Image 1 (cartoon, rainbow, N blue to C red):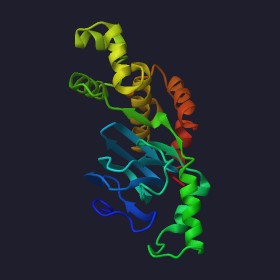
Image 2 (image 1 turned 45 degrees about the vertical axis):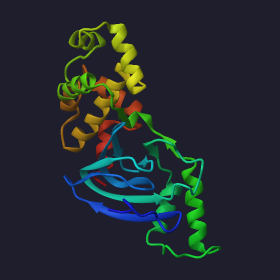
Image 3 (image 1 turned 90 degrees about the vertical axis):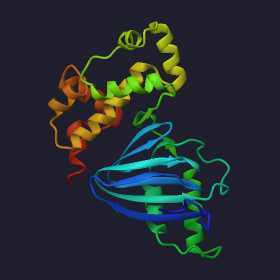
Length: 255
């Protein structure tokens, strides 16, 4: 893997890589910032602060030293940009999913293989400067992030929820299982994740539905599996978050 111990020799280094479905990259970190862009495919990134779903034409910004591992859920082509931490002072300061503009993806694709010893005032240097400027404007996509709670009892409970998403979970269920009041659960959950329990659950259901749809399951089956009352309710919620219907989402992977 790249830059686990040595810094990039230039402000920016770009690598293009292909992964096959089912492949993984074990837990690791880099001494620089990293931007992973999925040109085509689907990956799940797990980090200490949460779980992230990265669909095609989106990316994840990983800050310097963030431990993470990758799970490849669909044949995937990625661009990885490794950014020297002192290059810019106004880059994102936490790991998160981000939108990727067509301009940024085109610039990164053109920068693959640029020699690390490029000279100033050359085409290569200007491309790198344009990329660094675009990185300042990355737009976070919070709906693709499921934050991880810090307390062990919540972590264990939420793992059970993940395994039974078809259940109509409510705050009262959590309070009952933890033997504390709903008010305490609500406060503690928000403190740990930055989200209400309902919003956290919506995001978790969305992530699972993205994976299940790409596995070939029908909209009806997926909607029931992740806990929606009807396929129409699921499709409406899906389109509000993704910008595509479930059918359109699957179709873009078949092109």
